[in-house]
Amino acid sequence: MLYPRYQQAYGWPFYQARKMLRNIARICNSAADALSARERLPSPICIKPLLPENRALHNKHRGQRCFILGNGPSLSSHNLHALGSEVTFAMNGFWRHPAAMAMQPDYYVFADPVFFDGSRPSWQFLTSMHRVIQTSNFLAPWTAAHMIRANASLPLDRTHFIASAGILRSAKPFDVDLTRTIPAINNCAQLAILAALYMGCSKIYLLGMEHDWLAQQGKETHFYAAKTLENHAIAHGERRRYADLMKDALELWQGYEVLRQCAALRRVEIVNCTRGGFLDVFERTHYEEALGLRRAA
Image 1 (cartoon, one colour):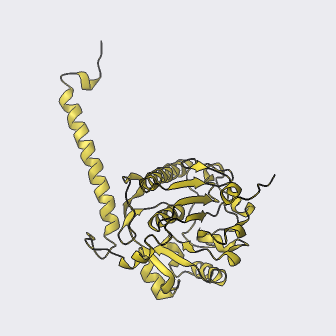
Image 2 (tube, rainbow, N blue to C red; image 1 turned 135 degrees about the horizontal axis):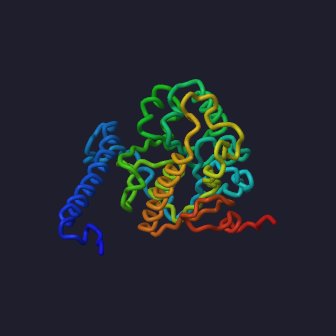
Image 3 (cartoon, rainbow, N blue to C red; image 1 turned 180 degrees about the vertical axis):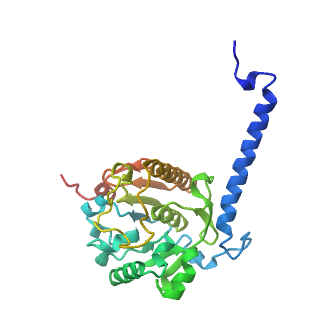
């Protein structure tokens, strides 16, 4: 009768050694990821707060609920004017929404430095955005701070920079502190959730986050038809293999799981109000029910 190697006297030492080496490799890989991100920061250890000005955001909206608006197709089916008195986060191409001018979201989130690289497409995008978005506060990656300052891409008196180190999907639940580094996120929605937690929001609603690109390969999955950064050399890249897209989706879902646990530490509920879509990490409700509106038939 054959036994698994870990049950054999001869194989036992090798089994234990292999386990130990794999654990060491995981620790070293995690440390390498953190160091590769920290090398871009002015303080490698961050003993003191890296971005003390972000303290102004701490518990700024304590006890208030908020709505985080993605760019999915379903966003065009909601009456966003009903959010006038709510705390709102928008992102990327939201300025193209018909309600954007009247809404003026409280916070506008960017996570990718490519929006600030000084290229003609990024300049055209930001110019168009500023025509619509005139009073919002901005959240932007610290790695793009020098470009934003050099190109006057965002109003510095209304911009907060966010620094990252490590990887969100492999992080343990943590208490968010935007004056220090946070684990690197996968998209703007994750950054908006972290910011909402830091600001003390009591309940977080998600809108326009279908996350269905695996079922829509090769199609633009936004409420607007155009690409977010038109004619940019690297923003949209080459057509990617389906296996790579699945890997990215898994890492994104794992990051959302960590965020759900971080919210639970603060006793904050994250609720997905998106009409349809695949994002099943969070509990769901209808947008109209969240606002006490009559649902469309």
